Length: 482
Image (tube, rainbow, N blue to C red; front, top):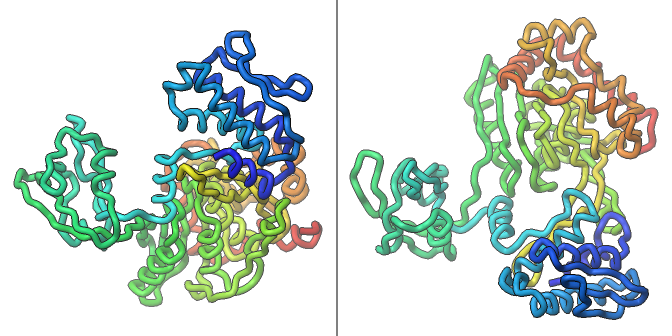
């Protein structure tokens, strides 16, 4: 558990680390399980202390000896379990969590350890899971009910209804079982059968026989307003780009040439898979750079370029972002803004301009480690600063689309083109960072405001051209080396 994890930190983490410091902070993390425990470095020795008394000591390896420090961490956990009833009672998994939490706190906010249960849920979100395609929730009595049914899944084909009470699985009553226990019973190998007995909202009971299959939730919602196609992506998973493609092309086909523009709504999207964010940007670009990544490990240095067709046929495009648009959502937004393919509407995004690599550990948990920074085509990284929208709607003075548009026409809203120097300085310069973060901070407002502003921009060619000019991304690229 520790030699694998420490080895990966040494191999891929963004900067070189002192494993003596990391390991010591990790061992001090055991105080979360027993507040009388601590660890200290005494010359060439690492000592474990409980209630003021040393109960174990080890020879300190060299600072860069990742394997040896991993071995020391494992031996220390064993010793702590023998010396502390609280650590022993908490169990080995709690020990892993405490030590990894302690040492990863030295790295960055996005490097983390996920225990086997959390890792399983994370993998299901990213890659899908084997099941029947239902979301479980609880009714007012705490009983497990069907909260949602995904389309084109075994549950949908069996006509299971939202709100149905789960009574039995494979003939065994689960009326007293917890939701997570029922979720585990619903999962199983692809191609295996499961019988689900439910009591439907109208009172009748029935048993549906289904064959489990790989289920990947569709995170895309689509609608049309004023002949503008609006596609919302809730978060990224392995099918995001394909799902957006299908939604956009389907809506365009239905409009039969009447479409006036596209809105890609990434508000509240926490991100996900890097390859999907790149593929999503590529749907709307024909050529040019999308993003690049750079880190300490040679494999982290990558350049991603568009190489397809614009599925919209060059229709005007707006991307909606807010303070909760992060990570992969920012990749897509930055690429489309920087390439002059789209205007951004909303408020400054979250500011997660880094990539994590995921290592599966021997206990089936996962270790997330930051291994590269992400750079927009013009060469800046939005790490810490976020991406400033072309048209800011997050203001206490502009509360409806008409006043926002009027302010924009009059040049009263902040322009990304005026923030070139601060964009490049902000990752390391706190003053530049504060200036950028104050330009268009996210605040609560009517969600329809962003959409209404975007619709007005997309359907007015002169206004759209003005917005493109306000970005002036080519000036950024011309004045700074990527």
